Amino acid sequence: MAYPLLDQIKQTGDIKKLPLQQLPPLCAEIRSFLIDSVSATGGHLSSNLGVVELTVALHRALKLPQDKILFDVGHQCYTHKLLTGRRAGFAELRRNGGISGFPSPKESICDTFISGHGSTALSTAIGVAHAKKLKGEPGKVVAIIGDGAFTGGMVYEGMNNVGTLNNLIVVLNDNKMSISKNVGEMANYLTKLRTDPKYFHAKAHMETMLDRIPVVGSGVVKALQQGKQLIRRGIYHSTMFEEMGFQYIGPVDGHNVLELTRLFNNLQEQFAPVFLHIVTQKGKGLKPAEENPGEFHSVSAFDLNHLTNPEMSPNDSFSTCFGTTLAQLGEKEKRLCAISAAMKYGTGLNFFKKSHPDRFFDVGMAEEHAVTFAGGLASQGLLPVVAIYSTFFQRAYDQMIHDVWLMQLNVLFAVDRAGLVPNDGETHQGIYDPGYFSQIGIRTYSPVNYAELAYWLEKLTTTIQGPRAIRYPRGGEVPALAALGCSGQPFDCIARQPGAQVALVSYGAESEEILAAADLLAQKGVAADCYKLVQIYPLPQGLCEALQPYGTILFAEEAVRTGGIGEQLAFSLQQNGWQGRYRLHAVDNTHLLHANVPQLRRDQALDAAALAQDILKNRKAVNA
Image (tube, rainbow, N blue to C red; front, side, top):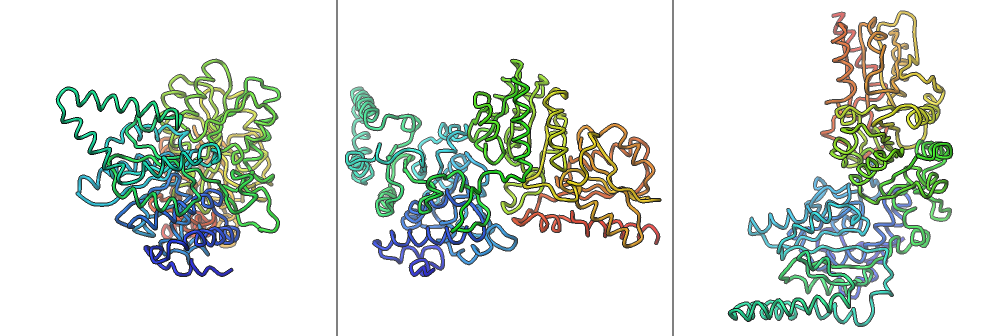
């Protein structure tokens, strides 16, 4: 497909060279490009289709990189990347060697901040805006925040600390309200009036003049402000933003690029932080995404002519196995409740919601609330299960300690997307939860296949009490691990060879690699046994005794090295008197690629070849 206008944008600022009337057709080209490109590579689609006009208007009115744009969440930055000279990188979007699906200061000076998690951009923007003030630097700071992010409390913490920053603009990207409901001729007229620079000058001069009048002046200002607030309540039905120090503007049609451009041009001069409320349609330009935007939030590559439901957990996945099993358990156990943080489809909890709607709770992008809410349910004798992606669970670390662990409440944490996660890069890796769950003291289980997941999920909801966690990877089970079945034991020897002096130990999806490494070693004449843990914390009873005879033990895990399970096993073996050679392969979180899982494992020396090579090198060094 030809993109004559988009072809003219080679670098930041080129959009300013286009005639104003060409902005609407440019938006149409960008939308077509995004649909074609993301359908081929996968990526976040609905959110990006909804902010095309907004991003174009910002780039037209602002001076980047002097002005700063922060996205909440960062996956809506694709148009921004197109307008800053990164179009060629879309051919390998979220792949090794291509561009990230999130803002990345490593890629461009126009990417202000990494933002893979939600509800954070306003706090960041306030910090950036204050830094500009302190350094005497010119420029605006714009935070684009989706309405979903307003379900997270951090947004309100930021709003409460906005102060009088007159270089800050907060854009609420509201894609749930009906435009026809609030955007009419009167609202448009008032928006134009209140965004005109003459309005700001008149407002500022009037307040300054009245403040200078002794005694009477301040009273008049107060009376005018109170009267103005009454009018606003009648027109906008909300004054929360203005009472927190913002000048509220809107609602504005978020797909009128010319009006948005005019508005941002007028906001070059402002006397207070501005809160701009725009109304958009998520998934705009792709009818299935418009009708079901959540289903096209994050997609794999798909055929535009044969669209499926990409956001639903596929039938063959750990998430679906978890969700269907939990729904079945809910039939027997009426105290069982399920909690999601805006991810009911991704975590498979849509099955529980369908079967037990009164016991399903979606709290939005509020992981902290999800955990403490679960603590409240558990304190009253219910059995809550909190299902959240590993990367987002870490946001509730304090709540896990204070609101669940201290009272030993009966809360089960279901950790989806555990271990290495493809494509989304450094912001979405599930590599920290083994460390922080064990640090707190929470019993943790890591099944390798569906049979183990179903078995241990039932045990954790019926027999094992207190704070506990079960973690499982993204996607489906692999044949080598599915063939292991379920022994019901906390650890197993899954491969044994006569006379082995080497033990390879792991848990979760990484168990596939130790089995493959044992085969590679056998080809070199080295016998190695393989051990798989299901219970990873506390270490299972009898594990150290089972490993005692081996002269060399290699432990591999898709989690950070420091504080991980591998370090804990090394210490426990030492405490039990073992004096062999210990090799640890874990994740170096100082460099995390956006790549597929096999590439990530190779990069982190967690693939079978690297594990086998380490054993062979170690044997040569010892023999030498």
